[in-house]
Length: 283
Image 1 (cartoon, rainbow, N blue to C red):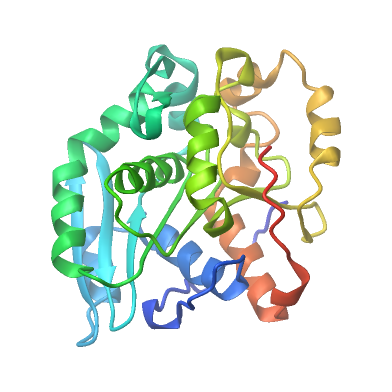
Image 2 (image 1 turned 90 degrees about the horizontal axis):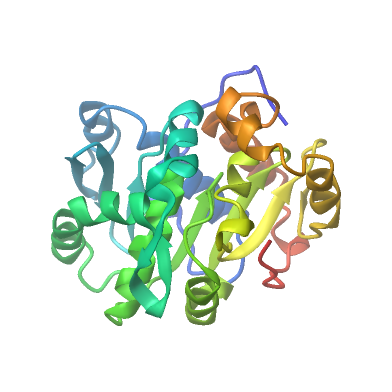
């Protein structure tokens, strides 16, 4: 589902709520953070430049984002990447599975990208977040990095408030997914926009599995948990997903973060928090 309209970026860390189920308000704030992570460090600092917020931007070997902390919560947001660039990440040599956190195996390229910046973000979170609830978010590649960062902190027994990703590709194998979901399935949410095919990569046939609670926006903007319609759609594309991603065909426009943000903002405005129950089915 796509939109041509512009929208107002929404991110106010003080609005995050201590919810252990899917919350449209939290989704709206974290989508705003994921969107803000695409901006320059100067604009991020300007947007977060309030007396009641401390923040640090990071940029190490093209892994970018920011850590921000308010009075009651902290957020780590990873910057994503353009659809065509992400196609290289998920279809080329770096998709090998290597030993990773939580006893599983993970995407080599994604894990290397996180490893390059890990000391920086770990120090930033330790300095700014301290004992505050930590929320993690990201879109596209940023969503993959968010999952891996959460997994590393879970390995270190650092409590996490929650994880919301948007348009996230698969990150690791079935063992990684199972152990990740055991640790935080009820507080981790993976949002997919209609025909976003990037979320179907790397393919299951190469040993990859998804993590977190699956929620999907349909073509008419409803947020659903029933993935049967999505599986029916995929059956029509058997054997073609790699080509679709490489050549920018249908599905990549639905991957844009501004489309995710418009959908999430609409959901929050409608106030349908009571309508969504997280049953924990991973696609």
